[in-house]
Image (tube, rainbow, N blue to C red; front, top):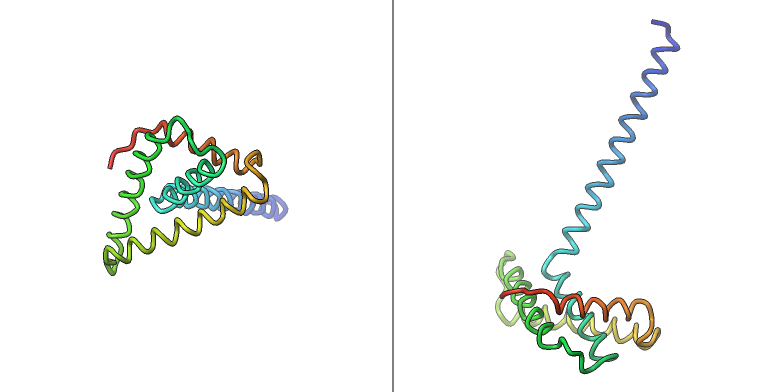
Length: 140
């Protein structure tokens, strides 16, 4: 085999390996972020944000009872997740962590509503999220 053919095959091999590595990296990145979005604490923050947007823009939604039932289930799951951490936090520490996260997310949504109004795209998305989360049938 000539040196040119060897160099060409070698370059193709390097490019192929590079493409495979980049692809796997992107897949792992996507998997990590999907897991992060599904973490109980992230879901809790999502519910808190949707709830605050509705409180500010549509204070009497017809699906409030369903949403609150699902919110209680999400809160219970986030609490269990925090209880499982090492070192194991006390009940008051868990309550404080969730209260801080709730207050932080509520402040973010309040700033969004102040900036965009209830018709803003991100606020609208939170209101639609409220409706979608109301339709879930979560159990504690």
